[in-house]
Amino acid sequence: MRRFLLALFLLLLVAVPAAAQENDPAKELQKELWCPICQGIRLDVCEQKVCEQMREMIDQRLAEGYTKEQVKAEFIELYGPVVLGEPPRQGFTLLAWVIPVLLVIGGLAAAVVLTRRWTRQTVSVAAPSTADVIPEDEYLKRVEEELNE
Image 1: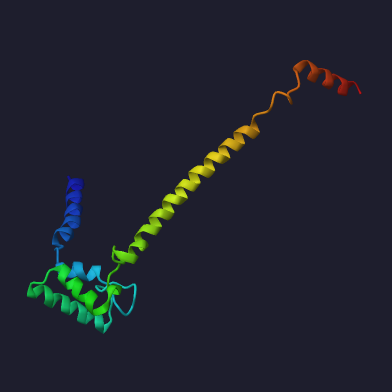
Image 2 (image 1 turned 180 degrees about the vertical axis):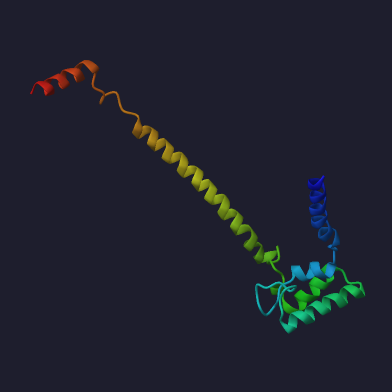
């Protein structure tokens, strides 16, 4: 009975914080945007004054009825695409998404080709030719001659 109560308590301990989390659009948007000054720090964790103002602006815009996409577009207009955590998937910056995928595919293809070549070479080198094999009778004869010497 104690184990059951302990398991129930632990389950409730884990489930309550998960249920308490809300889908706050302002927090979600703050996690998607990056500090334009610090470069590489998300807006929700940056302590710069500019980021505090940006967070307040997000709250204000969402309270006014703006959608997340409209707020994002406004921030891109104000600060440039640097506020996005990732480059936009259009135009020239599309290469930032395509090139790594192509490199991975090319690397895998090269690994497959090289592996096949190496396995073929080792098989052909490892297999002795019949011309080099000495018949058993002749081999025994040579061994006896060397022992007699």
